[in-house]
Amino acid sequence: MTLQTVPVPLGEKSYHIEIGSDNLEHIGEVLETFAPVSSAVILTDRNVQQLGYAQRVAENVSLRGIDTNILSIEAGEQSKTVETANALWNALLEDGTDRRSVLLAVGGGVVGDIGGFVAATFARGIRFFQVPTTLLAQVDSSVGGKVGLDLPNAKNMVGAFHQPLGVLVDTQTLATLPDEQFLSGLGEVAKYAVSLDADLFQFLEQNTESVNKREPETLQKIVVACCKLKAGIVAEDEFDTKGHRVLLNYGHTFGHVFEIMSKFTLLHGLAVAAGSIHAAKLALKLGLIDETLLNRHLALFKALRLPTVLDTEIDWEQAAEIMQYDKKTEFGKLCLVLPTGPGQCQLIDDIGTKLVAES
Ligand SMILES: NC(=O)c1ccc[n+]([C@@H]2O[C@H](COP(=O)([O-])OP(=O)(O)OC[C@H]3O[C@@H](n4cnc5c(N)ncnc54)[C@H](O)[C@@H]3O)[C@@H](O)[C@H]2O)c1
Ligand SMILES: [Zn+2]
Image (cartoon, rainbow, N blue to C red; front, side):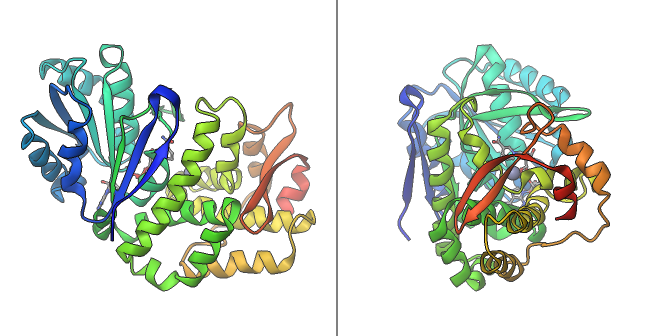
């Protein structure tokens, strides 16, 4: 299948997302268009390094005569800390990284977030480039320029907006992704479809089997559709101040509660999937959608093997309390992104917590 490109129009900070299959070796060619590049620091995590992706990127970049160095962090959310950032800043310093260097993040959302943050802050900002290797990172975290790290009790609390030079997606890397991680990314894909894109919704319904088999052509179509949606919204609201980006958060208010209640053992995209179904049930109760649409949501999520309910009992009183702290709650009034039609959603304000608990 041919390569596809999705533009992210952000004035001087505009960039392209190149999406293909088996196109990892394109990286050197792409990087060359950003000359002069004095050196490339390739940040990855131990799992991704073992799979050889960072090495393939490094070898290809070196072919263009650019010095490369691979830095590897422990895999997982526990690496998104100020301690990791500190270690990386010092490694960059030792490595002689300068303002003409580029940091390439080769990995999932963790590598992209911390790599982008280190790039945003080292020497008051060096360039960075994203090579996302999880489905979640390919359809979501690598696009939009939000980078950052966690504080011990607050996820993504410290960060910056630092747009990448570009993004290169090789859907072939998804072949090695553990099933649960693939499903977590698929949770975000299904979210985009049911809340923002009626065509993608229908495409998924008609292609569940090839999605589940991770067929490269199908994955490419999905990643292109999701990147277009996210790029469109980011272009209208780069710094998340105008409220447009809130529409990316369908299923997230409930999802966030489920993540907290599971003490973060439930993967984000799976929590979002179950959260989307709760939001759709609430929308039915409020008369925003009809039963046929709710049933379409349920059937699609089941066919994709996404959770529609949680295994654990939910303490709705505690849930309501957590929701009060949600960033979409204004003056104590709960606001939720709810579906209003196939591939459509709206921010609905002032929803009673009692109604939420009954969903
Ligand atoms: N910046 C944003 O806009 C944004 C948006 C959404 C999520 N996020 C962040 O993204 C992070 C989650 O990202 P994630 O789900 O990619 O998690 P992750 O980066 O932890 O990756 C998940 C696991 O998959 C492994 N992995 C990565 N690529 C692989 C491959 N091709 N084959 C096999 N294993 C592979 C990783 O080593 C890791 O163990 C969270 O920290 C979240 O806050 C950021
Ligand atoms: Zn999400």
